[in-house]
Each structure stands twice: as C-alpha cells, then as structure tokens.
Image (cartoon, rainbow, N blue to C red):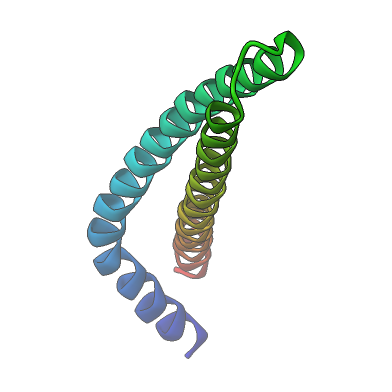
Length: 115
C-alpha cells in the first residue's frame, strides 16, 4: 500500500515536472532581470545622493533643484524596495520548486528500493 501511495505521489510530481520546469526557468529569468534592474537603480540612487550632497555642500544649487533631486531619490528608493520584494518572491518560488524536485528524487529512490 505504501509503495502504491508513493508511486502515485511520484507520478503526480513527474506530471507537474514539465510545467514546473518552465515556471522555474521563467522565475529564474525574472530574478536575473530584477537583480539587474536593482543594480542599475542602486547606481542611479548613489549618483543622485552624491549630486544632492555636492549641491548642499557647494551652496551652488538652488533649493528647487535640491528638492527635486530629493524627490527623485525617494522615488528610486521606492522602486528599489519594490523590485527587491518581487525578487524575493521569485526566489521563494524557486526554493519551493527545488523542494519538489528533492521530494520527487526521494520518492523515486524509495519506490526503487521497495521493488
């Protein structure tokens, strides 16, 4: 009976394997893309922080320019935070997929041992 239950579970996991493989590939591409976007936005944020610091120290910038740069900085920080959240979600889904792969391997091994 155990053998049959494990075989049914393994078969179910195998049937879903193709779908999950496509999803895993898509999630990995998303993670890579999000990571790249985060890197680019972080560089822009650092540049903007330097610009604001120079404007404030140099006294050459007017208040409107400093205010606009500060608002832009806040927007960038929000975008970076949002992208990091999406990236973490995709990474969680990849971990779930990895867990399913490991379970399938374990069940397959147990079924072979029972035969």
